[in-house]
Length: 437
Image (cartoon, rainbow, N blue to C red; front, side, top):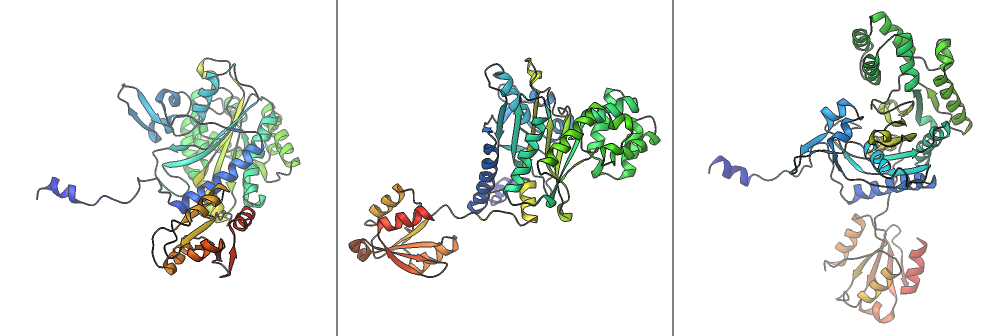
């Protein structure tokens, strides 16, 4: 046997692609429950769901997403029409394209959300996979701070809906305009230097202080300036900044937003000058939500204002703010705080036909399903105890036994696998019972 023959007989791997996940029914059930809670919250604020193609022209992401994502993290290829295509790593450029396409037809303020799958080619680790789902919540058409307030309230409301206490997470705010102003006016950096330092600040908590000072010193005029910048970045009170900074217009907006959110009951919000959001399209206020658990003390998700992105499509710009929440970091948070929902199987009744009553039971099954009761019929013809054990193993609580005698009497044996209790019920009584469950 040659080498090629051997490769053909080698068993295929049962593992999914690196950085992706298989969703067996129990995992998919949990995902549906989590997404259902998210949808319930965002729709309660008036947000409407949209979607877009998973494939986009590469140029759409080259424009503003950021060099790191485009050059290092995207799945790109040339299609059969010789077009450069990317599997979307995020949704913001796509939704901006969609809004720009119907700029004059849409009614503002525009509240949209999506829960799509995305792909990024990066090293899989805790909180990061190559394939992930992400909630995107975006508000178009509001320039004032009421937009920032609403978006942050939506993010907070989602965690609250899962039962999280506000002591379990922290919302950190900053302003890109504030930081850019400091870098320009106080340190005299040009546009390229400012861009490079902002990228470095975004990595501040992922590298050592010595590495930050060394890299910042290379971009700025000296390590002393880098040390002065680092001191500013560790400040968590706006009024503790130098007066010229703390009394600036950008700082004033941050103070107002902080006070408004705290007045709304969101006390776990604070200023953090190191919060940058690494994507190039952010223009002013940005925020990140951090898990307070020492075992998972990291940024979970965030967002901010990106007023200029729609304007890249040749239309009048629209003030816009939004955030993205990845499913992986959210699940880590819910797990560490014991907040994961416990979804039930998608079956109300597990019906076991007895003594050849399978055909005769079909009328009852149709009647129950027409009443919106979900019925799974065991057609395996195994012994009754094995069928009952199978129902229990699948997590079903209720088993309905239907035999020739039950069909004649029109009363069927319902067993509660949790308590072991049994009772005889008519079809109508079953319908009444399970419409209440």
